[in-house]
Length: 146
Image (cartoon, rainbow, N blue to C red; front, side, top):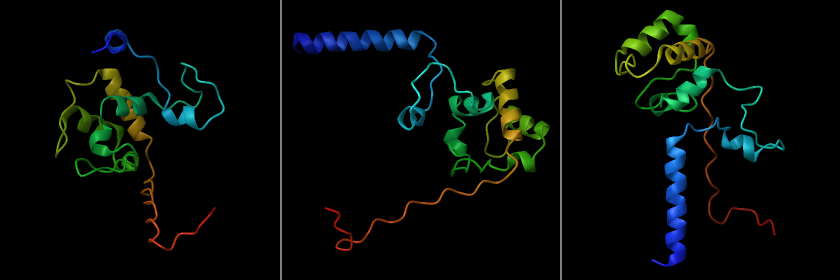
């Protein structure tokens, strides 16, 4: 390994170690950086999501219920859960589990659980599933633009 490669590896290792020991700053979604003319700040935007939405993401709920809440093969669609279940029922399901869902009583703090319930209770209408991308054009049928 050359001296330059060793120096880069040492710097990168120090950075990763230091960043893993400190609490990460609030992070804006990448889309906020790519599709806006606003400068990056370490503060959440005025239209920041409910704390429960953040908890939903940070605690890995998206793994089973999907990032768009439409469910996966591991967990059901939650887009209309606030219409189907009362907040007490949502809290019971999160806390005690049931069906294929594990209990999160030992995983979530009381505040995180309350934030999740508040967020999920706001999901009153069933959102339409995102439309799949159109299939690619057949070879030989694309238009020549240049």
